[in-house]
View 1 (cartoon, rainbow, N blue to C red):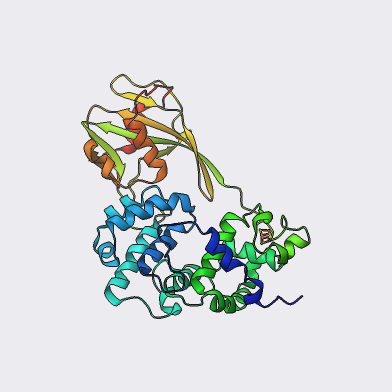
View 2: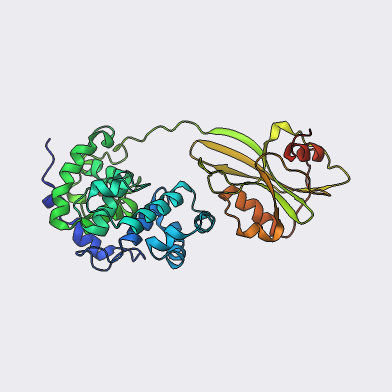
Length: 365
Ligand code: SF4
């Protein structure tokens, strides 16, 4: 069946959004005009990639207070950028945002969608979202939420992303008619709050025209993608302390954890548990499971106090304990830093201390 014409079909969405829209710090009051601060839209869209609105709100506030313009972000040092992003995950986004801000500070905002898409970190979805929300360009922004909503409304069989080009062409006239910023955000809001994976169709402004609801197939459309089973590992996470210093891996320039300091980690199988040696003291806490997209880590946090600092192994550095709180760490490593300052450490069975120290030391000549 051909799809109905989009401006009429989606008409109830715009007034519904005007009624229910959440008051978010990056949202403009006037949705008919270009956004007064396109940089705020850029920051929010990058923060919202893979991250819930409720998590982003406080980060956004801190970020805009510290880096209120593209120029202030462009001039900031990478350590302070990573520190402010700490806990939000997917740290590449912070570096992309800084690079995009540098481009905007030097050359101004691009004048069209193709130009926006060349900014670092802006794929087709983010470029379209920024184009629509910041500049009122009728650029259809389709993310996972929007694909799910449109697939159900239009009763699309199979993976809706396979029809991305057709869906963009279908949506564009509705953006022109109802306003690019308003309709883009309305579709996002509907996907986030009503047409969620488990939809609340009773609260939906489009329920009377939704194909999947009519045919009772909201649970089947769109089909749920099968995920590969995450790889499991068991790790010791080690805070090694000596003479008022801690040993950490310095940040690497590239990769998923670029810009972040890390505690040394060891596969648990390499160090069978044994009592601690007399010269040093070792504390272990109950562990936790850290879940990433493709892997699952059972983490056992340890605090090992050695007598003296020693020449560290490649990539490791001694950091004064007083400077620990200023370092940018990923979520897992932050948790161990928090444990170090918490009271009530309970000694448990421990791995072999000398072997742990040897593993962190520079190879002997
Ligand atoms: S009626 Fe239900 S399934 Fe259809 S768009 Fe609305 S919330 Fe989604």
